[in-house]
Length: 393
Image (tube, rainbow, N blue to C red; front, top):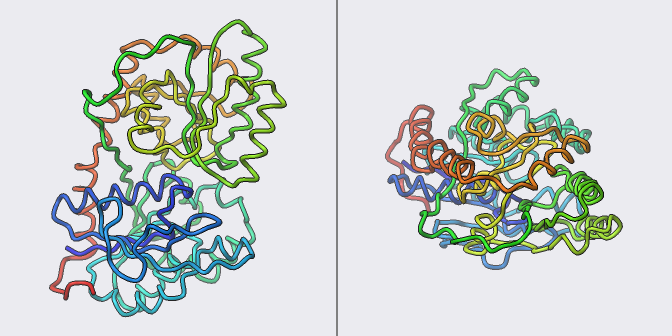
C-alpha cells in the first residue's frame, strides 16, 4: 500500500507533531507499507537546509521530498508555510497514491493538499494535532474562523476520517458538530533498551527537566513562578531545572529575563535543542519531567521521559495525564500557581524505583510504535483499499 504523509514542516522548532510523523512513517515502512513524507523546508523564521528539495531523498531514515517555502518578511504569511511548487506536484502525483495522511490544519500546504485530494478523489485522513482543541482555537481566533469558513471546514467534512491521538482531543473537537468519522489512536515511542539507559545517577539535588518547544501554551512562566515559591519556602533544599527546547528568540529572551528577575538564575540551565543520545541521557538522569501545559493533545516529550524511566509531573490538560494517573507513573496537578508549587515541593523527594519502573512499563505496554503502526495500516485499508498504481515519480 502507498501512503503519502503531508505535513507543513518537519522542523524541530515545530515540536512533537513534526517529530512524530518521521517515527510513524518509519514504523509503517517496517511493516511493508510504502509510506513517504512530503513537506516544506520550513524552519521557523528560517529554512531547513539539509532536506532533499526538488526530488526524493532520505531524511532521518525515511523517504522525504521537500518544497521550498516562500519566506516573505511578514511573519503571518511566513507562518502560513506557502510553498508554490507543492500544489502542481500534488495535483499531478496524488492519483498515484492509495491514501493521503495529513498532519495539521490552518496551513497553506495541508489546506491545499486536502482540497486537491478531494478534487482528485484520493481519500485522506487528517490528524488534527490538537488544533481543534478549545485552547488552540482561541489563539488567533479571527484568522482560524476565516480559514474554517473558507476552506478547512470543507476539508474536515471531506476527510475519510479524523485521526485523534487521545479521547480528550476527540471530545473537544466534537463541539464543532462534524459528522466526519473519527478514531483515537495514540502516538508511539521508541523504547530505548534497558542496557542503553544511563547508569547510576550522580549525587546531587532533585533534578527537574522541561523538554519541549518553547511556546506560551507550555506555561513555563507559571513553572518559574512556582519554583520561585519553592525556593522561598525551602531555601536550603538543593534542586535544579534543565530547560531543553527551541522557540521564538524574543520569547526565549522574556523567559530568561523572568528567571533572572525571580532569582532562579543559578538553578536553571538553558540547553537549547537536544536530540539523540544527549536527550536520552538528559531524560533518564532527571528525577522528574515537568510539563504544566495549558493544552496538549498528546505530549510526546512526556512519553519519551516515561520511556526513559522518569516519572512525570503534568497538568490534566496534557492528554497523557489520564494514563499516568491510572498507572502511578507520575503526578498530576492543576496548571495554577499554588497547586503546582505544592506538587513541586512534594517532588523534592526523588521518586522511588517502583515509580520509575511504572513509568517505563506504561510506555512499553501502551505506546510501542509497532502495534500502533499496525492499527494505522488497518485504518488505511478500511478507508482506501489498495489498487495497482504506478510507483510515485
